[in-house]
Length: 581
Image (tube, rainbow, N blue to C red):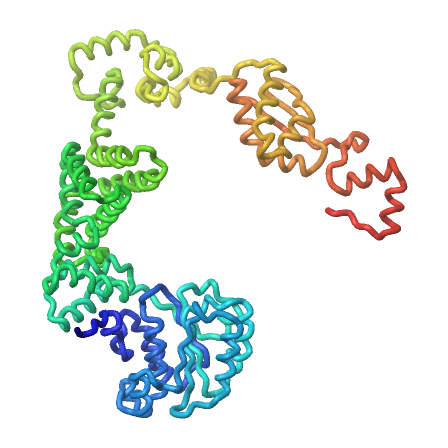
């Protein structure tokens, strides 16, 4: 039985030209070899499966090649290349720092560095997962990394750059490897499929590329798995079935029902998805991606952001014609809220079903609101007020009766209107529906203007000192646990009512004044609401009388104690103590 070699190893790049998705890095390395500007330490960092170790091996092989091609690639014919290809090169050492991370392992490597290469110009040391080295191992490596022999080159590779100490980073040329683009992965998978004489649908390869999340090795591993499942004919359906991926068609059908405001069909499709074993959170996340793709399909400029096959891209372009931008933005907002609240919801299925019903009702709420406003809005004989559609006979009679009850000369507060019409204040008609805005501007006297303004002013009720102190203490107690400084300051003294609606509060020092002024807006808002007096004002003053000044800071406390016990001051001088500020 022939040994099977996984695609990730069989089709591993062996030249710079075959590295997928890292063109800028391979170009830089080739130019460095061509111009003899090789650094003595490289750090390759980036996500898993993007080619860090592969590029390290290609670099090691190329710089020791005796016959480098014009394209700056290894010749694969010289003794150095042949020994490297067979794994017998004495000039390239690979160390897995995940399992060899002690200081003794690094010391052993450092001892080998000082032996010159037997064949070729350089000895290359590739240390994979270098972030796994211990602190002592890093320290033992520092001097050698900074001043290695001229023939030694170190190539470090890591997926977690932030775990490497700065002294190591400063001694290396750093190359950041990017996640490989979906199209690049799909093209490489197509190349592998052609080489293995496997028929693969373009949509299937794109799904694998998306699932790989930028890692070429993961994509090739999934490809091998799917070929074992489907044989030599790799279809889109086989891929989504084996990888447990929701079919694009589900989202396209669901969106069509949402646009048609067909709530019941959307719920039926969602039920089918759940019955097929898909996770609800996975579904709502995919729906968000679908609406995002519809939004970027609106314009040819953003169409390039779609990482899907041409066939699926055409479907997005066709469906986005049915949706306007405002609809898509509202839908994305609903989906985002559902995604955020999903984990904390006790009934997660209902959470998604409510979101689907809201999506299917986008726009319906505005129509209901318009009908409601048309009933509430009185048909005053004022040319500046736009007339609403003609109401029913019953509604018209009710409006005529309500108009008779409206005062003709003097406008009434909106709260009174709400009471008279038995409407909640939040939904009561706006002032503009009852009052001609020109009335205020055309008022003949100042008294009329004053009456107009006072009509719609906030409450300004009288209050007792007892009510004031009760509200004051209530606010202080609210901050007893979270802000002890505010609690202590407020409970230490009581505010004084100097004149109507004006309070004064005296503090002992500047620190208390700053703390209270920072919280003044919240305090004043609380008092106004509790006392139902929105004209209330508060002034914070500092006590100027030093005789009544209480010790607050560490220096004040020491001075206060020293005045009562001179021995404390003597103790401070004798032991040369300092006050902790």
